[in-house]
Image (cartoon, rainbow, N blue to C red; front, side, top):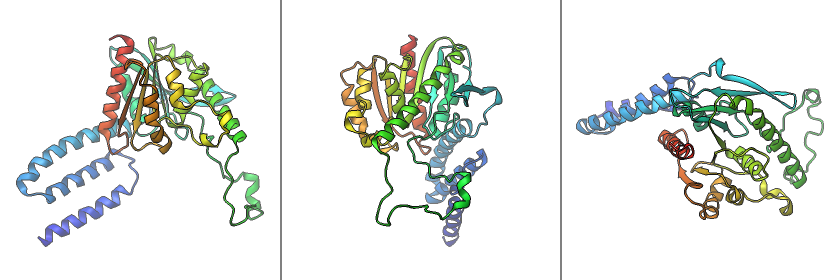
Length: 333
């Protein structure tokens, strides 16, 4: 009995060490899965553990396969392309459709603090959609313009200590003013608009329907641009955890309509996916988005609440099924 307890303690210790490290390879994932299976065998009697471990092994292998294909697969140089916007080079990743199905193209725009390759569910979408008959075109969005940048410029490094903080100790760091937020938001949305416009030539290689998938704060910008008729309307819009950061700091008379109201006024099919682990602003607005759009038919608006974090890979597959199902209705097959 003492030996079993000692063995279990060693296993837990090793598992803790591994899980604190970043997952950079398939081997790390498989080691963690192996330890989880071993722990399950110790925790139950011999008869029960045999049955449960078989199921766990099956589920774990599926999860390991998803992780290896959607997270660890390196990006081929053949997928990398570039566009130029305002004299700056922006990376685009293009993955052609796979197999006989050729339905069109999907433009994927991740959160503003990610690369074109995306991360987590966004990366999974980019790599898995082509197998469904849709080429994926992934855009590196404008970097987090809403977030203050406290980096020190090169010419200021030698001046360290000279009035770094001009505020009294009891004062809080000032937030953006309404005019600053408006200026930053407009600049970021203009960049987004120009980037998406530059994708027309790339998309022409894949004739068919167009799907636009936007996530997090990028989704908030895309919805606003579509509402203002600044973007060409896609055949299907998919928003994932949409929100606008610091919107409440903008003067009320200068604010745009809420995302819920803007979606209500769009005359294109919208699939609204909300993850339970999303930004709190998006979570708090999910109910309003659904209520405002309930007047539409299920062919024009649907909302699903799910788990899309790394610990719930089944949610990734479920979300993919929702996207594929809605897309099939759009193309008529």
